[in-house]
Image 1 (tube, rainbow, N blue to C red):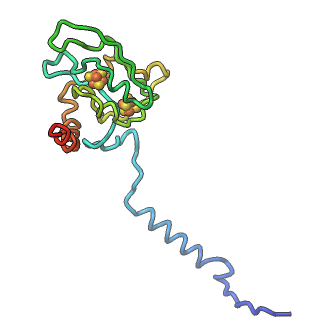
Image 2 (image 1 turned 135 degrees about the vertical axis):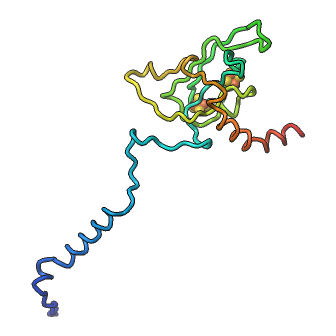
Length: 174
Ligand code: SF4
Ligand code: SF4
């Protein structure tokens, strides 16, 4: 039989005082560290041009008409089947425009494929991230909810042109 000789504990050790002291000092250090928790929604998330928020349709510089020609490429590219477009002919120089354009924001996965597919620079990922309402139907955005002036999308557009210029240029020379 092996007899293990245990260390004689002091009174403080028997009362767990060293461990309690270490735990308290760790808690105090954490209390005075800079906070990393964001008080959302009072403190909104910072956004940049890289932010891929909800897609929005661009209004041309005339402030009235959409850049969209209702070609349906974004609808075909959307992996979440979130886009539904109904287009019609128009007398304007652009010849076609969407009569109805809906994006189901509950289906949208913010992938940006619609932005990349669009040949008319008509749809861009905005910096709008917030999404909340009381019914599912209210989160199917129609054309009026999707329209944004060009100025509201300029930051994203500049970034988009910068990162896609490489393949835009190489495809134009091939
Ligand atoms: S961001 Fe992606 S999922 Fe959302 S509408 Fe565009 S293509 Fe569809
Ligand atoms: S790809 Fe562009 S132009 Fe074509 S339907 Fe979509 S937003 Fe409109």
